[in-house]
Length: 116
Length: 112
Image 1 (spheres, rainbow over the protein chains, first blue to last red):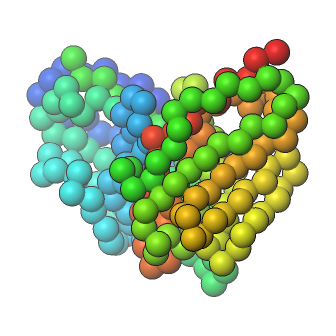
Image 2 (image 1 turned 90 degrees about the horizontal axis):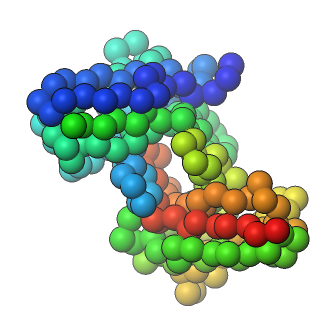
């Protein structure tokens, strides 16, 4: 296992188009997170899954954004009708739940979206 | 994250110690983390500390937590050029497994 994998690494799209990103978490990690990072800022939480259930969503996740994790393994993040303000790095992370508190999240390398 | 603040930039000479500071406002922060991000890469977890601890040491890294002042610091001993990166402080509440709140990051530049 090589860690959290995200695809594509870069995406350029025209305003108004739909885009979809994929995240493959570390094997057997049951928790998966999506974050967005704009230039010069820290990552901002978007949403979180435990297995296939989406348990928390940020107010940042507008109606144009939807995330799924249908089988509790990989996840997709779709943005509909992209806007220039959606240009950012989209980061995925995963972690395992467990009885110990050592459940830190491991991040993928991100998908950089540019909306032109 | 406006509730987590960091200084934006730090310049340090190779071989010296670096100290990166972070303050947070929410006293319910139970877990505090330091992540490293190199250009074009994702975030790498460096270390973390629980709120019931004052200090944690891991090789060249020392984390100090002052709960009274809500102040967290990361000390890197014998700083190397490979330590040049952006360092993020983050907090998480006990029952919020999904949500890390990050600071804006401190860019550390190591000069020869």
